[in-house]
Length: 233
Image (cartoon, rainbow, N blue to C red):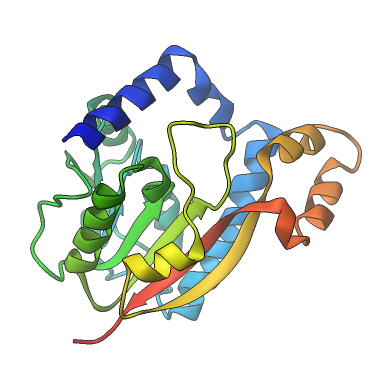
């Protein structure tokens, strides 16, 4: 409960400081980031045999306003098969307004209100790094595994380094493997370091080309996207 309240307070501070506007889709750096991440996501989904997503039951843990769920509509997912949970009531109100037909509810990742093996695909985008407490992070991982069916896939997008934000704790590959035992993993290194990305993406001409070339250097990419496939029972 203490960790839940800490997370709510951290996001309240972000809203007070007006930091949410930094992630507007139309900003050049964000547009480059989101489109690159989507290409990597399509590659992982295709590799897992999940495209098209017509009959998949999908849960987004820490869904925010439902942007990632909305993206999946382009891949064949059906709104009635899509569920999102989040701690923040204000974000869920926005999610309901933007995503007709999808189901949203307030829930803690460490206590998901769903039966075992309920979903074919889970999403956790910058979720685990926002959970600083070791036990709470482990509980969230256990819950996600519980509600994922055997053979189902968990997609994690998160960062392994973020020195400027004291409200988060980076997520490393070794920890992902420990948190999700019995899974097989398919990794992609993505997202050029955001300060560098913001600097270059807005510069013309050639800003996006510079981003593309620098993104080929793994040590300059601060995030990873991984598909974790749950073992068969």
